[in-house]
Length: 252
Length: 321
Image (tube, rainbow over all chains, first blue to last red; front, side):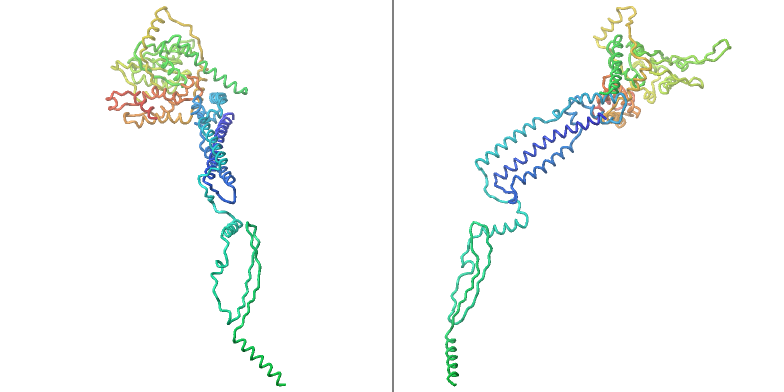
């Protein structure tokens, strides 16, 4: 039926207008968020660039906004904006099932008059112009702040912790990398004097390491060190053993 | 546009054009009283009857006669008096002599016309009033044990004088409810009265050449069209609520019946056609509320003491909607 088509067309016109509105709102949301993150040097997460995350959020924002706007659709919007159609649209909607002469005359007249109904009649032009001006201003601010590298805070902090196992390793390495290079005392503690004259000490130091791509390099290797010593009692024993050996040889 | 659409559009255009022609023809005779003429036409389109409250000499007969000429209907006038009998209106059986001998034949009374003006209905006795009301409601009269159908379309306008209530039989509430609307005919203003005087004093028999715009058949078709006028649900509900509020109003002893709701919506549809619209507007309901409701509600003693009229109460109800 023509009137049903007309009512559908009116709804499409409404959706078109709100598509523009939702698009502008989303662009505003993206620009404001992006500018705020830049000015305060906030990195949402190190895994992704800010613009990528903001783009995803903006898409969700747009979908939510357009769905909400479509939900608020009612025919009276056109009546308010087109006073000459006041009551005609409602009457047509409530009498869609009628097929008598007068109802058909109403439908025909409505279709005739509805040709003049366009999206323009329900476009809040003032609001849209304000949003466009605001978008232009935000674009200017974004470009300007980027060019002069103006940032209110320079914290370089993360809002969201990095995600994934690799990211955790990276964080660990990153923390290790950021620590200072320690000397032997820091690692092993203060050296202490030991008495090596009276005993033998055997010890081994071994170490392992991996090569890492980093600004500095270190070499890991394994070493085997042997230290030997003897005390006075050993000498006596050695002499006694020597004498004993000679006595046995001489005994022959 | 399809062929069917053109047909429908031309049918509707013809309808509105004819209504406009009727108004134009009536205005050749009547001066002013546009609102009353419009309400009369509304009543005709709705197949309803009118109770007209007016002083003598206001051109009631002229008005109904002119309209009946223009819409191509028979007209008759009944002057009510206390001694008027039902048979004087309905007709009676008389003995007729013919070749076969004598025979009882029914001689139709003045009620057998399309448009009837019953002057000062409250002067007729309740018995006669009942005969009239049966004719209005049933579109038939009963004489003896036989019923006779009235002409179609049938339209009755009864008048009553707002003054001189002595020796009258006021219509009971239940009978007033049978009238679709109560119309008040006010005195014309100076300009209109001057025009009336000029129009009717310059010629011996003022008889403008009135064109017959409609016929009985086409009028019935127009009555069908009237019922087809679409109305939005919220406007219909507004009419119903207005009527319902008369039953809840503290300043009224009794409110209007559901018949009033039906007739308010119907009158609003006819008003829309007279306005050249193909749908009912809120203003149609508001315009028709007073004539439809004013004779169906009864003021309380308190409201009467405060000097309020039924029109004031209806206006208050409409404002509150």
